[in-house]
Length: 291
Image 1 (cartoon, rainbow, N blue to C red):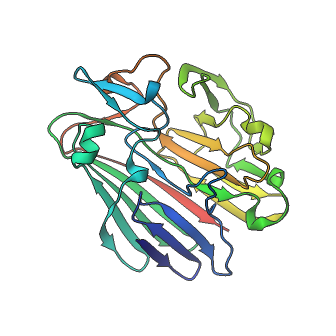
Image 2 (tube, one colour):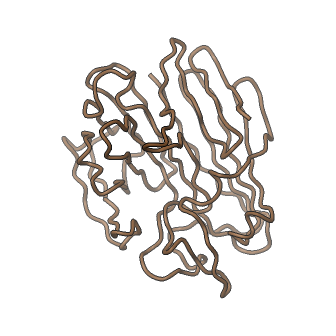
């Protein structure tokens, strides 16, 4: 089912499958969100839970038992229930069940709340531990935006502008797209800008830590822009396919990273996960502005 939120600035469509954002259109009809294409990337804006990225061999262990979990977890392929709705806001929730426990033997409630405010979408992610043991998890966003914006010009006319000059750290990955535990300073053009071209994505995604928490997608050929503010997220990823016709870029705030390369690990021993006590709640919000 598709739900619609709208105000005087935006019309937004959200699916119950994965609680995924499906469309963001301005009042004059400009589509900002990548509309999916099986040739490159069929998704639009999936949510990562209970892991972000990959596990070694797609597996992990818990209490001596091995489990399989797909890349980015199962939330993006799960049906969420509508738990609150108004004209400009809604909440979709995924609760643990037999299917999730077969992959992830923990009890949880994962909610995504969308709220429209003028030309912004405010998004709140919340996870509650509804079980009686520690809940280890990560969550993150994976929205894809049209690049070039408004379909004017080419992908290489697009660039990212961070809100202030700084030098973040780049997360280093292995050939298996798992982390190797190392980071390196990542100087940007004039301390704030990343120019987007296909060569930038030759090694897949770039993930940065210690950023300023606000980045804007712009184009040299259009006045349109998308600003993503993510102060409560530890990392931001930048990704697209290298295919010449893949006209989108993903800006991905994450709380958590892929696992270290090697054998499957005990999930509760991973340092880069959130660990919730029974009944405890973890929330994080992001704001996306469309201009």
